[in-house]
Amino acid sequence: MRSLRVVLMALFLFSAITSLAMMSVGVRSVHVREFRSASEGQLLDAWSLMRHLVGRRGGGGYRRDAATRFDEYGFPTFRAMCSDGGVGDGKDFPLRRSSGYDGFTGLCASMESLPRRLCVKSFRQPTRTRVRNALIRRVAMNWNRAFDVEDFLNRNFQNGPFSSCASSVDDVNDAYLLPLNPYFDRVMDKLRHFSEKGRSAMARGVKHAIDYASAEDPNAWVRSGESCSRFSVITHGSSTMSLLRHKDVILSTTFVVASSETISPSRPHTSQAPFHPDKDVSAINSLSFVIPLHAARRRAFANAERETLLMFRGAINSFPNRREIADFLLKNTRGQMYDLGPSCSTSKEYTAKMKNSRFCLYMRGTRVHSPRLIESMLFGCVPVILADDYELPLSWLVDWSAFSVMIPERDFQTIPDALERANSDWDAMHMRLQMVLPLFLYRRRPLVGDAFWATALGVERQLRRRRAECTKNVFANVSIPWNTVGADTK
Image 1 (cartoon, rainbow, N blue to C red):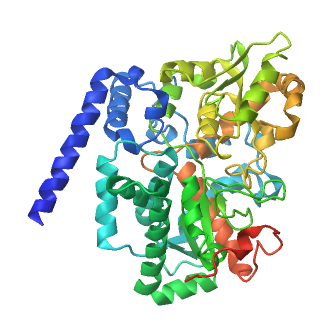
Image 2 (cartoon, rainbow, N blue to C red):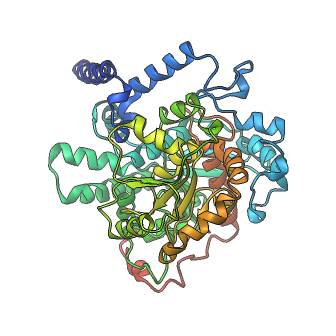
Image 3 (cartoon, helix red, strand yellow):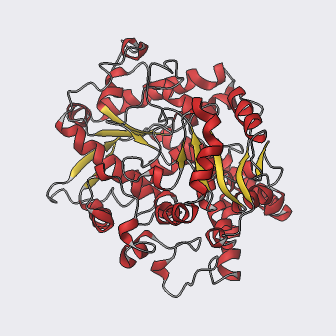
């Protein structure tokens, strides 16, 4: 046991020294892809945050005269917005009519009472798995950004505000968390031997987690399956493929996933397990504790003088649809400034372009989801979304059409016309974007109304709905191969 502690300490010191070496170079020299996530640079993030709090008491232009009114970045908290009635007028908050809330005040009250309605009970993991996960968090040097969301949600659901609930509370919704960490299995497979891009290792890890949970607490497993009160977080896209051999788990479990692409006849061959908006939750797939800090410090929302009408920076040549759309737009600028091109070389350039743009183009890549969506929102850049069948995060709660422009992929040639119409209403869209922003931001320690709480609100909603119709197979009428996959279930 002592030798294990020595090894863990040595690995931690190695990680710390590496992170400090990165800090000595400076944040500006780190490419944006290298600090979009949290786990890969926690010391770097902490250092940036400390410099910000010590050197800039104003918090990105906002007053810090009340600690509860501003978050760690300098943005107003959701609670502050509730006490103020929202940004501007609470009546303008873009709630969906089908959300079930009677205005913004109803949403505020629901958030505050959520810990009394949602009680998370986690299935146990083997000690070996817990030790392995803690070790990988410290030493892995190349993280997938979707993994960071997955790990953050899992840890806070297991040991966060909804894990210490009173069973005597009326109308409490027991939620059984099935902790899955397929990306950790993939990382371990890379360390040992790289096989099939780690997918077989992920499949083995998911099967082992399901077998262990069902054997460790069989009563809770059966009860949670029969009542559809089980949920799981699995945000890395290809990780969801590991579930395809467990059809009964798919049908009885609510999944928080980033690959929230609804099944349609026009796109039947997806590369992940099926998602259904009546059962699952679309993850807010952007976790960084540095980018929001930069957005607040640069007063991104205060910038109304934006020279660029439309901006996109990313892997524009890797996907034929992106190249086709960009070529068309650059030939049809109508005298406006369009900035469409490959990824920026530095984070400073990338964030400056978002701050200087009125609209940011969001296009499907390998999958429908990308952190780019939330990143553009942070800098007050109204999203122009081309991603068919994408169940946008919190789309059950907020009206995305009030603060973004959504265009079917096949109609990309209508973008110039759509921009002309939206540009005349840009100030109002920009204000509504500011209203919803707190719901899309993760904090190191979750705050009422942030992205973690909004995700938990979505989980509670789905579990409550599913409890009343657990026997319903939401995929029964889908005429694609998902229903034939996974005959050998547990």
